[in-house]
Length: 394
Image 1 (cartoon, rainbow, N blue to C red):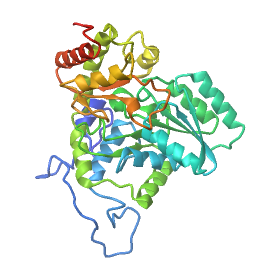
Image 2 (image 1 turned 90 degrees about the vertical axis):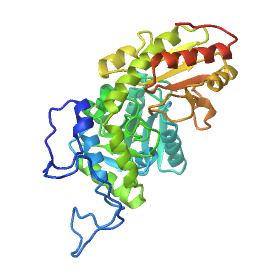
Image 3 (image 1 turned 60 degrees about the horizontal axis):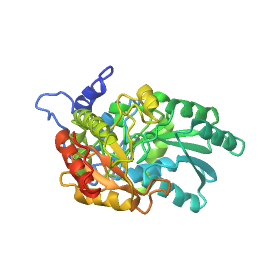
Image 4 (image 1 turned 180 degrees about the horizontal axis):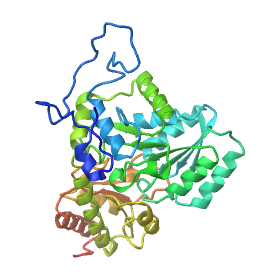
């Protein structure tokens, strides 16, 4: 019998959810099951494991825990990668339908949607997701061309890497009123900061690789929903397309999830500290961080979220300066990805798939759990070296 975790705070759920039953001599932690098949003597019945492409006991605790964290009525579904989860979510769009996606979002999602659109699977429209009126206008136009159930609205807030903040509940309600399905990528926020299902979103997406697993050592994705029919379709896609995760990787992700609340608390506090100092640095043209009172998305983020996340983006004078900063850091690690315990730095437009509307000299900072003063000292010296000595100081 599953333990009742109703009423527990999210930071408690990260520790309590997904544990084995409390029986005498039972393990405290969920074990890893390494098996490709299961003992069967009868005709397969609903719920039987049968074969590891469809089910693995090691997935269950993680899926239970993430579902609980997102406030879903059902366990989440884990996938072999975030992009595998995105592909499953996009499979919900009928052929000939349409997808509305932020112009700034995870490059993999945009690239995948663009590839599917080029194949004729659906029509893709990209929007400034922070411009609510413009998005509503796009939805109105689509409502005249498509029937209910043919349109998907893909939300990401804050966006990657521009950190634009959408009015999630407003857009979700508007999409539903026009018969559209809504998917929200919650990778940046995690359930510690926001739970999109509570805003009415139909499906929540995670790149588990990032904050949830938290140690830059697994590649995984996940989807969460409270709709049994949608979950059944997503599960069927995972099984038939083989977008499955290895049990050891999922076990690592569950272990990482146990410290999510602490890691996010530290990362957010340090991100706010760095954003304030970067805003005063003479070498920085602009800081993008919803936690700054001067940020365009600050009021929306404060109203919707329980925090402002651990990602900061800065714009510098030019590409040469941005590249020089990335080369000059000694503690920050120049690498793509985000959400690990180590702080990462990257000029995003070096990635070929990054939209042209992302400034060439934008540098994305994924803030880890190191000492804030050490992180700032390293950034400051790198900025000074890259710009010939302009000192931000402390």
